[in-house]
Length: 246
Length: 193
Image (cartoon, rainbow over all chains, first blue to last red; front, side):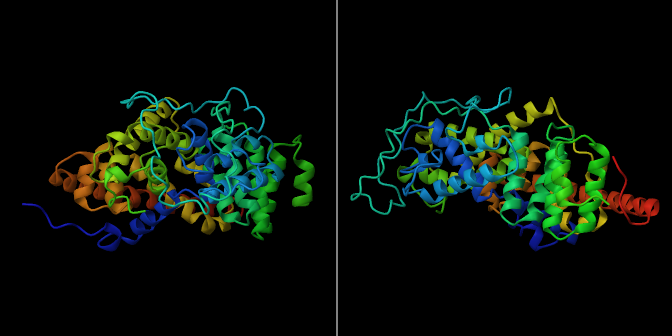
């Protein structure tokens, strides 16, 4: 005997508090930037073409007219690169994935430990025998900016430092006009790296976000705490411009 | 785009990736991979997917992806546990002016969810995540976690009980500390670290 299929809890029976908490799980959804960064990284480690035409363009932020199948994503990666380049955070450039300088040293990471599930020899499947389900705009005409030959191998998959990645996301959110999201990310950073090496940068971002939200009093309170905690900070000039000292 | 509907022969990696990346991403988060590590973990999953795709013999692709994601998540949790800081609830409020709490309510709810999930055993957590958050049918949940349907039901109900209790506990704690903070400084700037 099997039971009747239950309804999802949030539709039936969950107390309001629990429902709110369940609803918050929507925030686990990756944003377009996150997916673009992921795709760029995968393009660097997987055989050429695995992700479809144009995927590699994500890594080559400069490449002009990359308009392949997944160019939507590639283009986003380019936007990311641009935003980061203009952002206040140093050391965000690695996020643009591709060639951007060498990765900061000493950072943990990512060469995928294909561990626990290496069932097949290296690249066994020749993926993509068929045309993609979502074909590129013009498959035959226009010989598609030579992507298979694009130098993909040397890209150091290695490293994006998670700590600054989180703040880079916050920075993007801020620049993108989402101060609330920036604050949430800053908060996540505070949780994950209570003694991190970018605490001042985090606080600066938080203060900028508060200013962007028009919360002058909150920004001033946080700025005051910053001044107390880091009297010799190199950020003070910017801070003063942002939130004049009392 | 419907992951369930494809015959295995039609699966190209790029399609699996396009359709499955958000699912894998949020699943990893919900299985306890920290936000800062999720991109790494996601990459690991899809490298494995790429290698194993030829062995996918049909059934629910989501269930198949989940099986890979859960292994990667478990590895990540194990690695992270060596430097584990369980986020301290009290620390969440530090230096946060009270007027900001509304903005952060959502982030707070998310943290609460993550804490509640972290308190579940892996088995219960997986069922809970797939059924309540991913809204997969129970049969598919059972397939994904590899247990009998009845077992999946009992894990689900046990998980609900746990989550409900965890949320209630945390709400009570928050109400208490909010009261204390107000009493301390009359609702102005909260305590300094």
